[in-house]
Image (tube, rainbow, N blue to C red; front, side, top):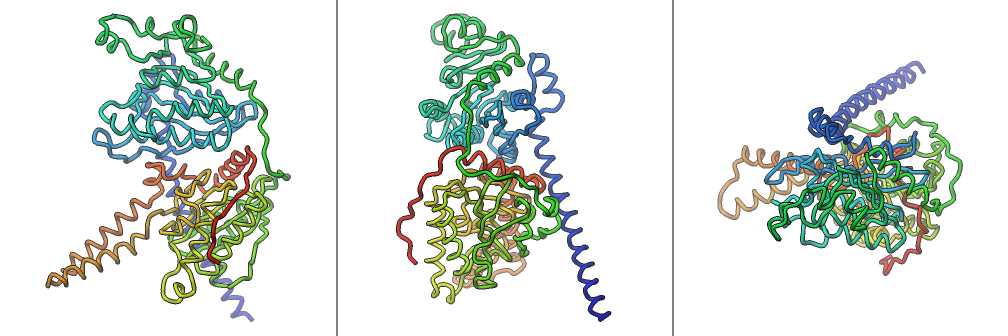
Length: 547
């Protein structure tokens, strides 16, 4: 009896030590995330803040803080966008020169798209354009108004071919403003700086626009262009200042003297917006019985080590309660995906979550497909918790139909018209990225954690495959591959894939909407869920399955 007790105590000590190691690792990793956020929040440091102050301006996130309801939070998106983007002229475009995100104003959700003039004078690089359009896309899908806080030099001219002519580039901003307005989604602009050439349309196309005296300007061509084109010499103020557009041209609607007065006017206008409602039954919010902080202990520091996702669900579900679907189906294979229903801050959500190693077998693919269809039938939003390296390979699985059942899972994900959210907490590779609702499958939001790794395959697998191919090619050419070079090549591939799969790399290029600390995950997911159900949920049609 004492031997059993001692063994149990030893196991407990080992587990506690492992949890402590995990916690220390993830807290250190998240310090890197916070450092990245600070670079985006404060580009240029105190010198740039002082420059703004002399102009009578505040940092843009301070203005957003004044706009939103007291005591609420700004759900900022893509804070890591633009870092390490490596354009010819610049390595970093901090936060893609924009603060975008969702906040409450008079209880309603609004999307804010705000230029940060401290980043390249607010000029638009290709990544800025992508971030601006992504924010408009979220607002349109959610059916909520947009607020633009503008202070921009317009398109970054040396890269005009990457900004100007395409469908997914600068001109699409204004197309979206027109189309959203036509759907009844109000567009509001507070101009606190320059709005030149195409950028002027953000003032002119707004349902209502506000300009700050002797600070805001809007014109199709600035003074240098006017002089070049027609020889007229004119100041910025006389050509397109706030008094011109609110008192003469009528291009803007409200004249204010300061940024503070402009924010107050925005809040006044947004007070007139209809009250938003949600289109699912909301229940009483109950805090999880397992603290969210527990995620730091239970998620292994090795991304490819298996996890118990039921423990993860207990940290984010109301009352830590999860009603599991087919819990005992095909143990060791069917439970590599866990499905079921839970509530997050009173909102119902169907869960499809990677479990154990996350490898998707025939049985787990079948179960996931069934559950997607049930969620769609019941018009329940779906949360995909992704931690899968891919679908199982080999003759046994292929003969059994893994391709067919995996395709069913992909089809179900593609055709599900309920709101879908992806939260990546592990590997995210190959076709599992499709079946578990990656960017190509239009989730309303994608949030990564520092444990996420998204690429076509793992670095280790890619290194092995590519090194094997090199050996084959060498043999065909009648030579032996240098094994030392082979090992270097393999490690180079591992490093390359590991770098490109990292959440910072993915967020920098806007392949996801934000890297979220573990302890903030429940709040982000709850807000994303609420925003996703502000419109009625349509019926889903699935096409032809191959059962």
